[in-house]
Amino acid sequence: MIELLGFLLFTLAGCLLGVFTGITPGIHVNLISIFLLGAAATFNPYLIAVMIIAMAVTHTFFNFFPSILLGAPEPESALSVLPGHRMLLKGRGVEAIYLTIVGGVGAVFLCVILFPLFLNLIPFLYQYIQSAISLILIVIAFVMIITESHMKGRGIALMVFLLSGILGYILLNSYPLPSNFLLFPAFTGLFGISTLLVSLNRKTEIPEQYMETPKIPGRLALSGILKGLFSGAMVGTLPAIGAAQATVLTQQITRRGDEKEFLVSIGAINTIVALFSLISLYTISRARSGAALAVQNVLASFGLNELLLLVAVALIATGFSVIVMLKLTKKVVRAMQRIDYTKLTVFIILVLVVLVLLFTGPMGIFILFISSAIGLLAPLFGVKRSNLMGVLMVPLIIYYLPI
Amino acid sequence: MEEKVIRNIALLCSVVGLVLLYFASSMIGSTHMRIGEISIDSVGMGVKICGIVENKKVSNNNVFLMVGDGSGSIKLVIFGKSALKLNESSIDVHGLCSEDEICSTGVVDEYPRGSGELEIKYTGGNISLYD
Picture 1 (cartoon, rainbow over the protein chains, first blue to last red):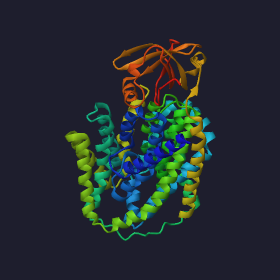
Picture 2: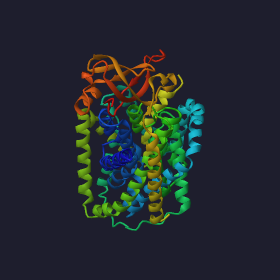
Picture 3: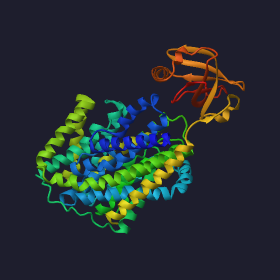
Picture 4: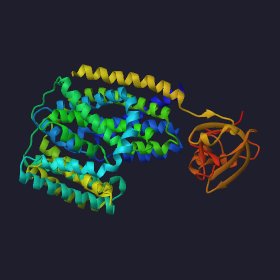
């Protein structure tokens, strides 16, 4: 009974930490996991593992607050900025966040139902697909570029993809920053500051927001969740494919212009990746996320009992996150309306610059400057912002090329 | 999908999670084993052993205890950081002597890999004097 109480307390503590990491731009689960690993010598390692997973799952729900409402994303939610922000500017910020919640909780629900299938599927996929990672990434990049509306757009998309790719390649091969923050300035610049600067230039104002959560058609929700589940399975199985690449993949298989379905998918992906990384740890002994890697380090062995324990924690964290977010979303969006958006945008830009300076120093600021400039190219030339994902895809394509 | 449906699914997730946590938490933990029963198949398992300290070595604050219980002997490794924590919280592991009787939890490990030599790595929890 005492053990159960301990697990519950550490789950709750992990959930609260996840809220903190989720709503704070620049503070990632991996960073907090490193500190928690240090506590493993004092506490029962299982309690630490429980805390890490509760934090990781809760984070995947709450990090849509800064990405949609403030335009300040992390790698996993970077591509949600544009459709989410667009909905906010149409007065549908509550709906945008609600769609990600539907995706997250729906994906967890489906994943638990399909749990036995995934236990058998992941080792099979891992065995047969891992040799084709480069090819898969090249195909995704090709589809991303070719689906631009006209020839000139395709040329610009290729340029944006390659420029961000070169930036990523330099960062991931020369390690100019501490490894925990290696991509923080680049993502802040590519997806955050550039979006905020465009908003600032357009003198964006947040219109009055619809406060009712709409009824989401079951078909739209199911379609978005299934696409998210498929992409999540890729992440859980394949090395080098992370939530960001899975999102790019989902964007390509989502009907053009259907931003609602995309937001459901992206909500599903983030949460499903947290769950799949546990299944991968059990089935193929590979950690596919920072949280899973921390769990692998803290627990001496990872068997079925450990998997069930952490899936239970993930379910509780999901319930906690959804209920708290449903309560908070309207209040937060209402508060946003009372704020001068231009001042808020300037404030967020300053906070992001200070965070980058604090965590990565002058070199980080230099990278932030370059990445913001590259990030501005996509909206200024009217091509999809997902082409900026070259920052991760190009280095991985090169790394996994069989030469 | 209405908000009410989503809230109900979230509640269902929480309830299923709590039930699963109840069962999983009872299955997690260390199996009490006689040292002689520990074999190469036990590598990676969490175990609890009780026995007599046969000898002790300390190196860079890491404590290496040879523990025997009549059925066999095995090395119990307590790394420096854990040893210091234990010294502060429950038992002075640096002060343990031969013939002290102790119980400890840990994970069975093969070290060096492939050598067939087994040891128990202390991973957390209390080490208690045998009562």
